[in-house]
Length: 194
Image (cartoon, rainbow, N blue to C red; front, side, top):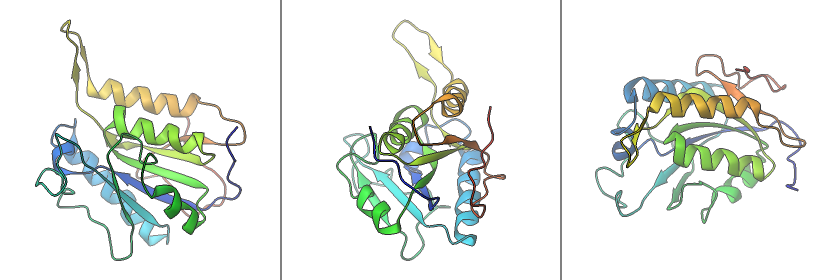
């Protein structure tokens, strides 16, 4: 069993809001605006913001596609974690940054829903963190299977939002909230349930 994190020290984790990732995401402009809103609200509440940036063969480090979208960037002193795997925890310095901050509760937004957001959400819960997924601040692209079946991006997003309300981990709490309603100030865990 994971070591459950005691307390309610929130951090905001923004994952892969990069030009090459967001260019393939459903409703990217609205999602980017919502991510920006969540970042502003976290900063106004003195909640630490941690940024994650992915690189791989199709998204080479330093390329124009690898850059964060123009409207979003770390403020001075906000950590930027570089990763090469779906989970922001795997082979990165994320856990060290969370430990430095005394984090116990992760608020999560970014892309892509079915890859890096899902893997990071489960990684956080597996490591004993409480989790709030910002339901209207993550996105992905539609998937077309070899047999021609399409899994629409909106359905992938909705499925993860539902999963985050139904999952149950001992000693941890997880749920969803909107970019407008996430409350970084309250001490109690207060997310919406689907």
